[in-house]
Image 1 (cartoon, rainbow, N blue to C red):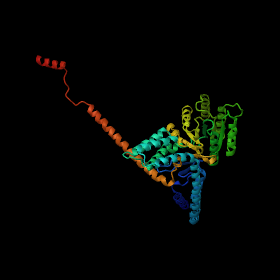
Image 2: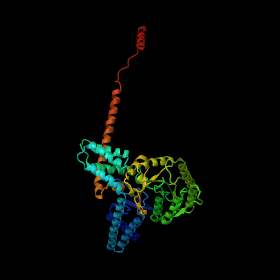
Image 3: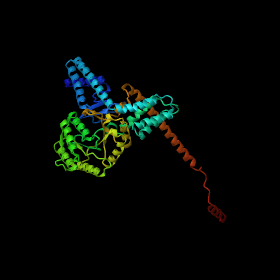
Image 4: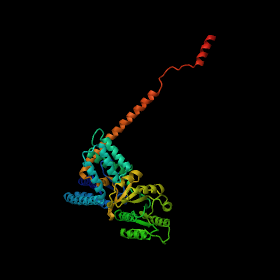
Length: 480
């Protein structure tokens, strides 16, 4: 019992030491992720000044490997400390930390490089705007509106930014460039976080009760099949999960072959149409039945590309979803819409139709590395309330990343690590001032309403008797 107690104490000390070495980002895949293990999946949550507690969010950016390495380091320190070799353990951990930090920097650079075109355009226009010290407040706001609309940020979010900057600059002739930067950063993060935060960005999961079923939809050429291939590889290789693909795009022979190549590359299984004229819903039925019967962890259903306004194909898609629901006893855990970032604002209208007719749980935004329209990610989230769950910033498997709003916005705006704290603090100050101003406005409104009610009420005067009542009363007195 005493030895077990000592080992527990060593483990606790080792965990504290490793966390101190790595900072608040210990056990992370991308900078800023906390990780914990639940069943055979790895979950995590973005660490930020705004986060009050760790929420569970399925993530795949090198998480499984990194989490296991972290656990091994803690165990190594504890064991060697118990053997009296603490110095050796600390030296090994120090080398491990240095290597980890180097890899994180490389991963972050790849992510930032993927958003280079979007960042260069937006940042270039912003720098010109903020560098002009001659413009007054309204002229600056007018130009800021042009910059944000050119970046495909969208009308709603642009108005939110402008109104916040206007309120924060009240009584000033000119806008403070740093205030604009902090408000822009804070607003974009707030929009992309959505009301549910990290929980809303988690891919749907069966949580161990049968296979997780993911249905992937989208128009032609959006990158559906490639996204499925990369996602299946990550599930299999990083999540160590048993994955089954369903080749339900029976209208395009090349689609089945393409998915089969990805299945072989990712070392996962695939269900193909038995006959060339098999209907898509039959492949759905066969895939789900096999997945349930043979104990697969994840089933991913590919679908044929279609325009959002093609009613016939949408009815077919609805039938496929209904068949999956019947075989599972519930709807697929995730209906993932794949959109090409190069389409920009046009993707919003497509997504709106699919959301209404089919139901969409999340978005996978592809080809962000090949466009300057990365800002549309903000508008599609703001306008439709559909969370972005995955983004593609390159051709490799690891370039399909879990969407992280803070990391995305900082990469888009070119925010350096040393600037984050100051910008976040300034935005918090602006938010507090806005909250206080809103409170005062509510109090003033309540006071005005109370005053209106008071003035509209007649003064309390004695009620006058009617002439008939007065006459009657007078007559009655005479008779007496």
